[in-house]
Image (tube, rainbow, N blue to C red; front, side):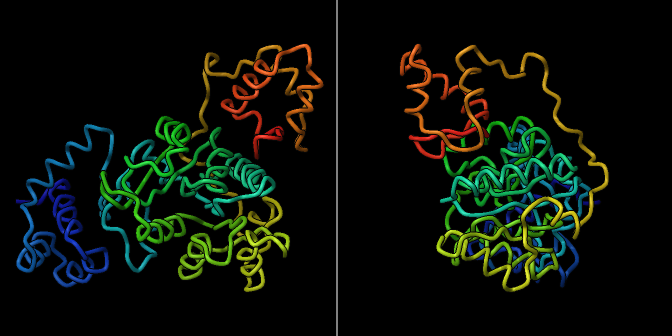
Length: 353
C-alpha cells in the first residue's frame, strides 16, 4: 500500500527530532535508500525513536491550530530552497502559504539600526513590494522589522529561527499578529522549538535561498546579515549593500560587501537592473475594507501636518500646540505610531514614516 503524505511527513518529523540529526544526516540516508520507510528503519536501528504514527497525530494537531507542514516533495514546497546543499526536508508555515510562489527579495540588516537605516529599509521594501516582490526577512529588531513594515500593504514573509509559534523578540508581537493575519510566517523547525542562538544561521540560509536578491542595510562586521550574504553568494544570489559612513561600526560590514563586489544599493533601480521586474505575483495586494482604513482625529491631523521626514523634537510640538495638554499630545503621538504613520527613533524626537 502506498505511503501517504502525512506518513512521509511523520517519518521525517521523527528523524529530525533525534538529537544531533539534521538535514545533512537525513539526506545522506535518504539519498542512499530513496525510500521513506527504509530511511526510517535505518535511523530506528541506531536510535531509540517512537513510531511515526505518534508523529502523525502531532502533525494533525498542529494543522488544527493553523500550522501547515510541507514536505520537500510537495508542490507547495518552494523550489528555490533546493539550491541549498542541506535542503530543509520539512517546512512549517502559518498564514498565506501561497506567498511562497511569489517572486521574493530579502532585506536584512542590523538590530541596532539608525534612524536613516530604518527609513531606507522601509522605503526600499515598500518600493520593491509595490513592484511585485514579496519581501523576506527575519522579524528581528531594527532593519528586519522595518522591512516587514514597508511591505504590509502588499506581502511579506518572516522566517523564524524557532517554531512558527515562538515569537522572538516579544516586542514585535503586534507585527507578528499582522503577519499571521495577512502574510506568512515560516520555519524549518517544528512548532514549540525555542529560538536558541545556534538556529539563527539555519534561519539565515533559508532567507538567502528563498530570494532572488539580498539587500543588506547596516550590517556590522560580525553579524547574521553577513552570514546571510555568504549563503547567498554560495548559491549565486546577487547581493546589494547600502553604503554607510566609515565611522559608523553598524555599516562596516555592508561597506566591506561593496568592496568585495556586492552591488551598491541606493535605490530600487539598482536592484531591478540586476534581477528585473517580477512577473505578476500570484497573490494580489491586500485590500482594506472601509472600516479598516485609518481614521485620524483633529489633533492627530494637526500633528501630521506639522511633521516631515526630518526629525523634530517632541518638546517643539508641546510649544507649537500649547492649546493642548502634554497628555493629549503624547496620546495622539502614540496612536499615530500604532497606525504606522509616525516614527519615534527615540523618546525625544518624532518624524513621518
